[in-house]
Length: 367
Image 1 (cartoon, rainbow, N blue to C red):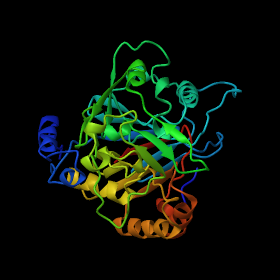
Image 2 (image 1 turned 180 degrees about the vertical axis):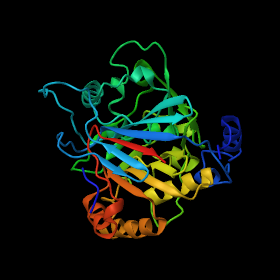
Image 3 (image 1 turned 60 degrees about the vertical axis):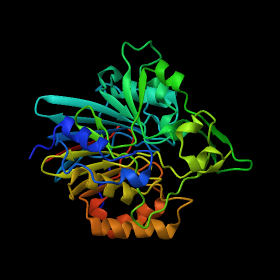
């Protein structure tokens, strides 16, 4: 049935190896040799702050090997409130990790709107002042739009490090839906600073809060192609000179998601937990990249949006299921843009590995 409802390298050694990757603006160079180990954490939780679906307080918790899913994680109250968690087409996840007495919190993406993220943070009793770092997987509105809610509109007492993969994050995009297709807009650096975020462009693997890591740029190593339903406008919102030379002189071009990142943890006794926020570069490619960086082959869980909807095909979705069967992670947690074809086929082929989550749910990983 489907599920409903020995310490690694030091931070300095990791960063030294990451710098040695070479010129990080080139995906091919970013695929160079990487460190053979990364720090382990003793435990990890991932809480869903924003996603497409909510479900009432009636699903049971799940306890399975190396995983506990907590369904009701908000502030306890004697009466049910008329205020509720909200869902939208976007993604935001809060990762909390523990290593010995040291705890860290990392926010991965911001959802679509500040209103929904702010509402859910309040409902779940989460204080963003306790965050150690944030990562933005890519420059799409449904992943960055809610960033203004991070410090609740207050003047921030500090600026939270925000890791992005490249200058392309800030370029204006046009969504390939409708006629005429709508302009998605740009991610504004000044607005990020006002929201208390300190942007750091890190196309090579980067450490987050001493526990988590980004993949850096993700090479296309499997059958998966870059599949992104947007076009990009170089020089609009971004520094054209900081882009790849082949993109600098074009007014608008098909988006290849070169700047996209995934985030991962190495959990002691379990293996890798990979957060592939939208997987425009391919969810399998994202996992392969995490394996290459860490030197850890065992994959415990793959979490996030896998983008197995157009411009990808149903056949690509089914083939991705076949490849996951070979990879054999303990758990697969599809969210956001994954698509129903993949989910239905994965439930048919490997039902015990599939975890369905809803806004507010918390995934807890420990050996």
